[in-house]
Every structure is written in C-alpha cells, then in structure tokens.
Length: 268
Image 1 (cartoon, rainbow, N blue to C red):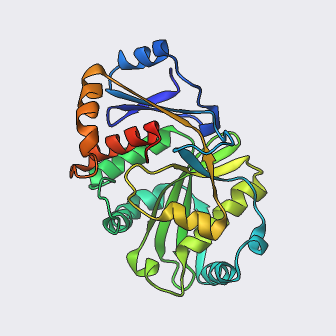
Image 2 (tube, one colour):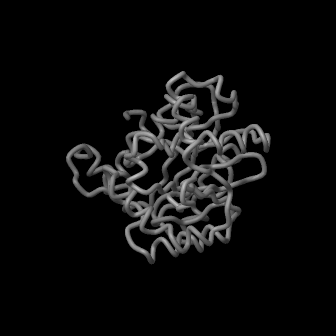
C-alpha cells in the first residue's frame, strides 16, 4: 500500500493512472488503519466502455497539422511572443505564488492553494517526487509570466498546476495556454515517446474549463475507468443521509464528496 498517499483525509494512488490496481476489502482496511476516512480507487484504465469517470489523456501527437486552422494560428502567435522551456524549480519558488494565486482567483471554485504556506508545502512535496517544471517567458523582456509543474513517471506524465499572469491570460495576442500545452505535448509525446500525457481525472469540483479546452483544441480524450469510493462507517452514514441534498449543499468540500459518490453510482 506504499503506492497510496493521504490527501485531505482521503487515500489516493500515487503512481501512473494505468498502473492503479483494484483494491480488495483487506487492502482498503489496511489503508484505513493508517488514518483517513475515504479511499478513492480508480482502476481498469482506458477500459473502452463509457463510464462516469475518466482520466483525460492524449496519446498521439500530430504536430500543427492535427489542429484546426484557428488553433494553429494561436499556437504560432503564442510561440512568437512567448518562450516555453523546462526549468528548475527556483523561479517558481521565488516568483510563482502570486501568479498562481491570481490564476486561482479566476476559478469558479476556490478550494485550491490559498496561502503562501500551502504553496511552499506543495513545492516541497514536488521535490520529493519526480517533477518537471516549465517556465513561460515574455520574449521581449524575458519576464517570467507563468509556469507548470508536471508529475513524471517512466512513460507517462500528468500535467499539474498551471499559473499564468492575468494580464497575459487576457491579452488576446499572447495565447499562453496554447503555446504551453502544444510545447509540452510535443516534448513528452514526440521527443520523449511517452505512452500518454494526462491532465488528471474528471474534476469533482468543476473549478475550471481546462479539460474542455484540451479536448476541443488539442484532441485530448476521455480514457474511461472504474471508480470505487470506500468510506469509514460514520462517513458512509453521513454520505447516505446528505446525498439527496447534494445539489443544494453550499459547503464545497462536502459537495465534492457527494459529487464523487454520484459518479460512483453512475448518476453524474
């Protein structure tokens, strides 16, 4: 069970999505004996049948030719105005927090990194794992205007948090997200020959539109899988009682758990 980690009192798999096994009752119990009140288990990666849960992946890179004319234009414009390159984590540690906070302030749901201490904890956690860091720079003055931190495994990669200065997000001629994702897709899929890149699993908080963006603009696809959520007995009772009211409960963390329960039941 060393491949699972505890995050906000919920156990999650720490390896590549395609490597997550289906847990049995004994294995779930072993995790609960170490703490936490919930286990999220996703398995049967890319199962070829539609389910209510998925990882968003891209497993082929077709260059600019695979993109629509409008997307090609924005990618080219972005690459002309901005530079996207792999960096160490020093610029992110020094300059990244205000950029990330401004990015999250634009989200509809504010349950992300909310203070500098949480940001520092996150960066220290990244240092213990295998992460790649990407920097985004203005080509005119070399200003550091954004970054992305990606979790890397042997032959796959998960795109992590992305922070872009708001003025560049809203500057219609810069298109930083277009250049960033194109550059990363090219590096991991074409240059490194990875099996796939992923933007993670289906969002239970629905805090941004990034997955819809990646599907529409860069041809990411839903890699369907099975979802099983296991609860401590008292949480199971609470979920059962609150579930009928899931659409009107205002507390975001409670709502997220109930959203996941709905996905497990195939009702969302």
